[in-house]
Length: 114
Length: 116
Picture 1: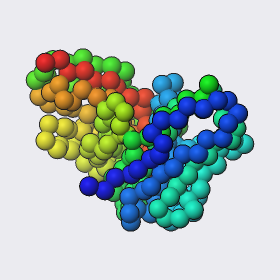
Picture 2: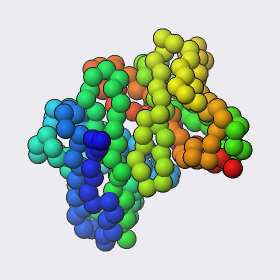
Picture 3: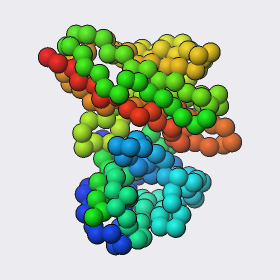
């Protein structure tokens, strides 16, 4: 059963540290999304890629967040420097980008910044 | 104009009862309306979805009702079971401008508890 894999599952770090979250999309999926979930804001889109090219990162704080796809099997979301307000669950999702084909979410990285 | 408003925030239903969750949207460019189910510690998983060319879609115990003129859609869970206890999110997206249907705007979520 193909699934989106995210690492690490949990990350606790101190304010000012760099955080890197990784995602392995489902093989053959050419769109990859990063969503953030918080109690206050719910699920928000941060960025997404099609065929490894960034299409929209308007949901990301540009000064500290960056998202890349070094290859088709790896997407990364980096926060530098991290702040307590970045504490959230970060989800990666992938899809085949064929019409309304379902989006498949990973189980997230729970980030706590102290 | 990008908002999707979901209600109620929480819902308690007895086993066998009907759970109803409502959503309203503003952006008329939206033309894909999925519902996602999320269990603690897991990512959201697609439950059922509808396009605006139909007013209702049913899959097993789950039904989406869609009212295009009112810009509202709802999820009905018939014969609710304790295993249905989860958080449910409505969402909306559209293909306008060549974007992806995966670019979802989510509602705030409804925590459903089904008592045995």
